[in-house]
Length: 246
Image 1 (cartoon, helix red, strand yellow):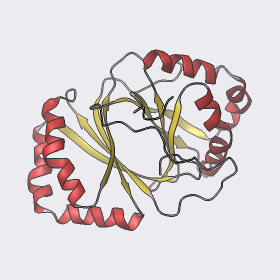
Image 2: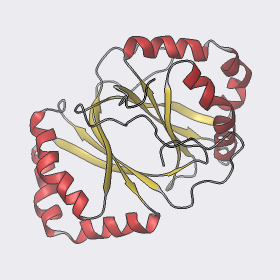
Image 3: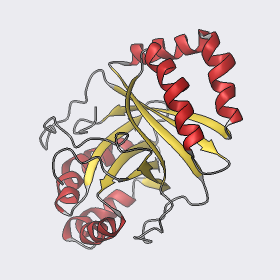
Image 4: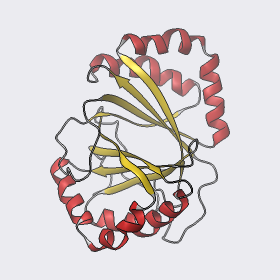
């Protein structure tokens, strides 16, 4: 992938792990799975610990399009690295099928190609501060211009005023799964946005300000409900030691 590409196809992968197994999976993933996946033609956008659930590992994987997604996944999962380590990886997992296939809501809404150098293999110290917040809006119908326009007019300014630094925004990708060996969630309509905070204290301050904001509580949230949002869920993420997104 060349610099500046905003991965048109993104997987948001949320794994439930056996109790106490997360550190083993993170160590294996950061050591063995990052560079081989990227050599196969995909981008490991970021990998994270769920701050609120010690048995959850979350990561993001990007592709240039659906046909090349299939090619890249075939190369990696049919290759020697996965064959060598798959049993060890799978032994940590209770469920790896919680996967949303996403596309940016607009030309400027995806993740840019990483500009910082990823920490080298063997890096063990996680970033001490940065936090990524994922907000998932579930809707009864597909995302449309009315919803994205409302986000631009009302939601984004309110988030910025309360200290959220926007990263990217996505909606469900409805294309057929081009690699059915790895299931994805279907039959859902989801809008997802990502925000970054310098530290957990800054995130807490952001959430307190929104909780106290009359405009957010009395206008913005009811407006989302009126536009068909049936559930608003957030996941707080801490980057692993080698996550490019941090």
